Length: 486
Ligand SMILES: *Cc1c(COP(=O)(O)O)cnc(C)c1O
Image (cartoon, rainbow, N blue to C red; front, side):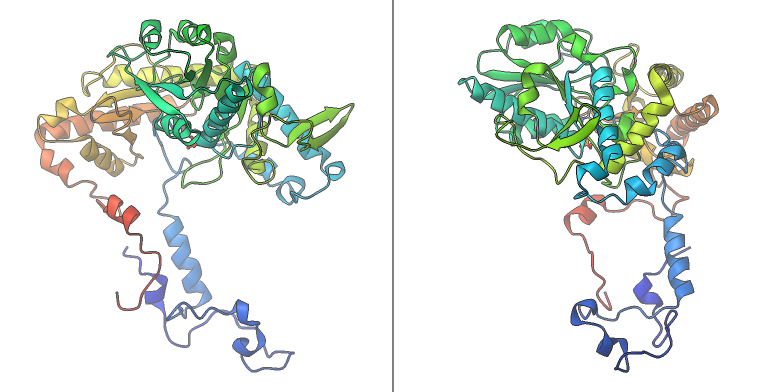
């Protein structure tokens, strides 16, 4: 099963299909092709047959683990199944081959799709206006924080701080910092959710916003959200909610109705477009009316039955400007739109209900086998730790690695940071009872192995191509080029 590098498969003189003689002057490709088409920077360019190439890459591809291969309970990521109809729609020529410079009169359908998607997301989140431009959740956050900064500067009273609870997503602090704010941390004080008192103790007139994640990174609903945001509003601040995990709320709860002024949604999580590997995402931002003038350009406009793009800065003097080339990741929007049209209002509500039910089912059936730091009903995900297993020297990492031997992708581990040795499981609504049971059985078996044979876990996984790779080393010293003899 050892797969060689393609360079190591090279045999002098072996080649793929070669066209017959040239009908232009010259003997070899090197003489015929323009200089820019020739690679002389790779030493020992592999000489392989077409079959070698196809088999090599097909074998490598079959080693990928994805949502189409098996259960992928990665917490805070919503790895739900992506219905193939969404892929079909995104591959329609009119969408897939659309050029971003196409004049609006020739791409009315695409503009209409974006316009409608903005309206759907506004409805789902309880906001007045939406921009689809941000290319990821984190960029949606940054967009929101830039807008908040501009809002206070416009009022002639710039504010310098943002309150972020310890149960917020890690990107929240980074986005606020990037937008020029000083981050003030508040602790959830062991309860797992924020209290109005905790916010009152830090809220002042130099605080621009409270930025919270709901459901928070413990998978808990911030039940005091309305009261907490009220404390912020009283001092003239704004309420930002990271809504990346809307999979627990959509259809029956609107963040806008809980006082939130800005919220970003992750299309590539809640609305099913595939993600992972850093692939394209989409993190639309929804805002209340007062913040609409600050939205990035271009805006999509509907006049009578015609759609157009408005980039006119003289009409939008308050805009924070452009965040992304053209309009954002359009084909991610197409998939999300297709998903929304297939699901409808009742389908979305049902999805959230099932996501919550599935997470609570896992939580209830695994508690006792794995330590549960917050034993309350959860939303779309639940958090365990390695506390019981650590008595035998078995860690969260060992448990995650061993799960791979059972054919499952490991859950999110060591996150959220407020829980030591966290194991965060998010099953999503798209998994069947049989899959959940199989996962629960595997986790129970691992808990038993930890008791009886901790060494087995220490040496896991045993059934995969590689066992424990040096992840930090690979990230810090990436070797992206093959060098002969090394
Ligand atoms: C995933 C996630 C983010 C970041 O989203 P990206 O698209 O990866 O930038 C932010 N907040 C929460 C709560 C998330 O789950």
